[in-house]
Image (cartoon, rainbow, N blue to C red):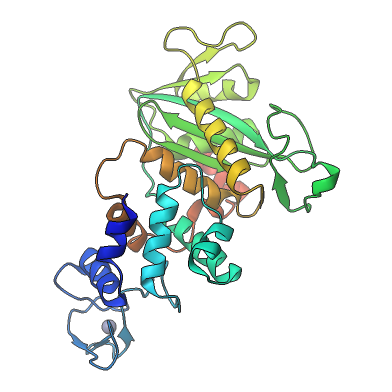
Length: 319
Ligand SMILES: [Zn+2]
């Protein structure tokens, strides 16, 4: 994406509002509260409308990642473009330096932009690779990382147990999208829940390594196993795509963010998922992002932990 062009087309609040309005409403402005199209323009306030039906006033940013922001929209648009362009990630510190805003404001905006990258739920199918990875580990003494943060200094140990290690399960469709989820305990039930929530089992085949908890997944889907103690790949049987994704994420986090909190790790993963899933995208990525962000629920569904009851129900059905 060309920053000069982004800047040229979105260098004023009015131009940004117009783009958002077109993407959200097309030609017919709709009340953000009651969906009525009986609205008046409020002449004294740019981009504001009043609804004749529910009597409330609104602008296009109500209910979106931009809601209640005091930052000019051109700064948002350029930050979005910078974040989308940064292949390995862009920290709030860098955004702060680029625009001369406070760290707190930059951080808040970056997190909201990541929320805008959360893609609608779709189920993977075809050849699907599944693997887990561990984030965090023992911090070096000179860079002490607080308990609630994940250091990525020693994040490569597979299946290691450590007090502040976080396990993340990832699934990728060959030549398709990736999906990740933080799973505290890699039990058969939790893995089956992840699989059923994110993959179709008809005309699909799962590839995993020999980790024994994956065996249970055969109750739902056909599975081929690559035994890493013997070989790295056997024809089409491998999990190279998902392993490539893990190194992409880890290199990116290490280079751009150093350490991030466990609580917000899912949001950073959303950012890397977006980048991976758009790796071959050729169109207008800013527009693609804005469309996604405008229709995205503010609440991150997979941010919230499911109750054990919900997990059991999805994993094993209503038996
Ligand atoms: Zn209304």
